[in-house]
Image (cartoon, rainbow, N blue to C red; front, side):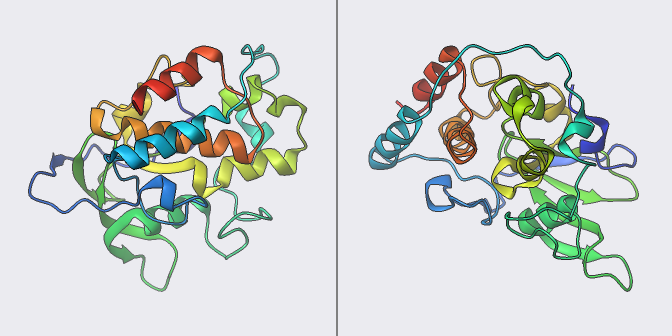
Length: 232
């Protein structure tokens, strides 16, 4: 299951269909550093071909042991004191940076330009729009697209702590989504878990590949095959 640090504290909140709400998100092919909001579906044949070329570059290997994995090996959750990633050391923790990036109608705690108390979030994984309030909603979590335990098993166990802190807080690897949906993912790769909204799966595979390539982390052969399949 995702670490408890990934959940935003509070009571259960509601969601509504996004059928009458404009999607807010950027095509991951046009957002290689993850600073653009959300995740937009990849639909054109040209973009799908480009997506497959990107995924083809991802290396493969068998998944290693989880022995020694601990969330704390990637630094404390949502640390701001991280170098060489967007928004690192900007005076605001990673979680709030991501909510600001993807949220609409964002409101802040009195006297703060960082701590978000309410917003509207479009979840690309489900297609729901969530009216979120910090005081009453617990159904938004920040998904590590390439899960930290997966990273550990694919080579991050041999990294320095500073590099592990980077991948844990890099906006390229982070998307705010519906909490229960993220809870179903655990540390799965694309061969065993994909977003329930089928239209977004190619974009999700591209984002997984972007993280893999940036951090020189392989994926399993089954995961790569599943990623390619989403973009056919």
